[in-house]
Image (cartoon, rainbow, N blue to C red):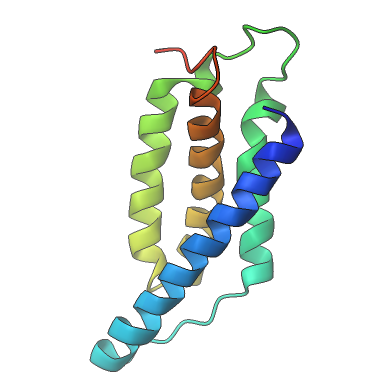
Length: 123
């Protein structure tokens, strides 16, 4: 996949994530606990875009087998877990919300690459 496709996927999934995140905060946390966090979506979308293109910056597509450690199934597992943790903490702390935006972009970059013919290596 090219950079434009990864950016597009990162933007779309960010808006889905941001919608559910804001819904959760406004319908559950604010009435029950009294917590209200207003996050700047513009910063979040920029961070999600960085996360969605970073794997190709770290491992440029110089040939068809360019995928290594930054594009691996193990990296996908680690970034999924890190996203889940930062997303939960991000409900209460804006800096973790921004971290979850980054890992969301990275996860969906790897998920998009996993659907290609080459897929993701195991290492």
